[in-house]
Picture (cartoon, helix red, strand yellow):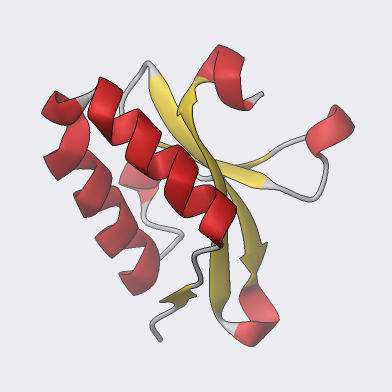
Length: 91
């Protein structure tokens, strides 16, 4: 089963800004998006649910410093990225 990434205009702006600041992470970032579409439960993504004010969202890691927060709609097979950046910026 594969999933569909659904990008909002707001997320695309955030991702563009992130990649302008961190062009060295572009390949890793794209690989994470591909893995999400194929299998969001892939252990290398380190998918985990968030709590507090971000309850209902999930996060996956790009590397130890950067992550992507997501709305994960398993029943609809959709993944909606919400934000990308370092932990301080997205949490």
